Length: 82
Image (cartoon, rainbow, N blue to C red; front, side, top):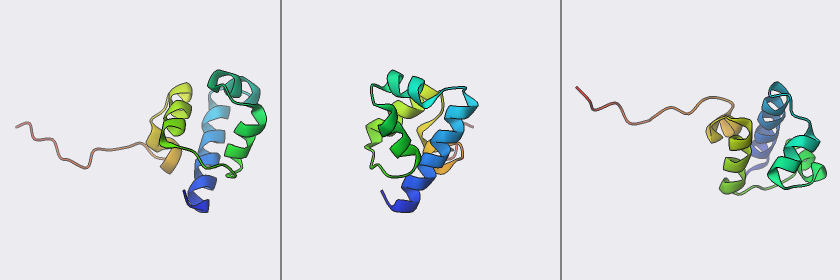
């Protein structure tokens, strides 16, 4: 992950965490990580695997792409049903 992507993920994570009313401690406990580690993610200091990003998104009830880009994921393939 590039540094700007790590920072963007951290900003988006923090925004969604706060919007859901989670403290760092509560979300960290649900994820099985320390609050210090979660804080590092929010500051953009940690490299995450895709599985970790999926786990974060699942706990927050959002799509993984929302955490990465700040916007909802859309399909790049047009609907073929006619």
